[in-house]
Length: 283
Image 1: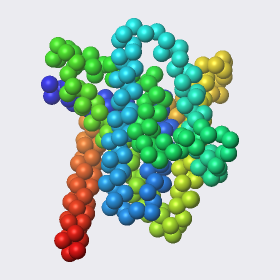
Image 2 (image 1 turned 135 degrees about the horizontal axis):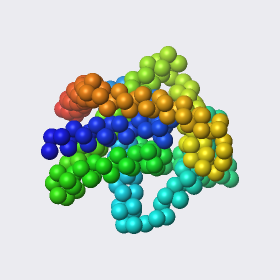
Image 3 (image 1 turned 30 degrees about the horizontal axis):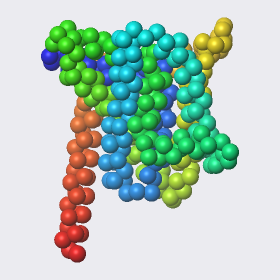
C-alpha cells in the first residue's frame, strides 16, 4: 500500500508538468500573482493555498470523467479532443487579450461571461482547463494509477486517487503560493497599480492560449514543421521538469516545500482567527 501511495503521489506531481499543458503553469502563476493584489499578504497566502486545492481538484476531475468515458467504450472523445483543445486555447487567448487591453468587448458576451466565471470560480475552472489541455499526455498516467490501485486492492482504491490528487495539489499549490509572494512584492513596487499585474497575467494567459491552440491545431495543419518545433521546445522543458520531480530528490523537495508552506499558512490562519476573536471580544 505504501508503494501505491508513493507511486500515485509522484504520478500526480509529474502530471502537472506534462508537455501538453505546460504553458499553462506560467499563466496559473501569473493569475495568482495578480488576483487579490489589494489584500494583505497573509490573507493572500491563505487564499492561494485554497486556490491550489481548487485548481488541483478541477485538474483531476477531468481525468476521472475522461477515464469513465473511455472505460464505458465511448469512441467519440478521442476525435473530439483536437476541436476541444483548439476551442479552449482560443478562449484562453481571448480572455488574456481582454485583460491586457482592458477590453469590455461590447456585443461579444462570451469573454465577459468567462471573465465573470473566472472571478467566482476561477481556480476550479482553471483546473478544468488545465486538465482538458493535458488530457492526451496525462490520462495514461492517471489510468495507470487506477490500474495499480485495482491490482493492489482488487478494486479501484480511493487511496491511489487521493494520493494522485495530493501530488498534483502539492505542485500547483506551490506555484500558486510563489505567484502570490511575488505579486505581493510587485504590488508594493508599483504602488498599488494592480492593473499592471493584471496585464502581465493577461499576457501570459494569451501566450498560453496560443500555445494550446497551436498544440492541438497541429493536427489540422498537416506538415507544419514550425508548429512541431515550437511544441518540441516547450516539451523539452516539460520533460526536464518531469525528470526532476520523478526523482527522490525532486519528490523530497516538493514534500518539504509543501510542508513548510502549509505550516506558514496554518500559522497565519490561526493568528488571523485569534485577532478576529480578540476584536469581537473588545467590542
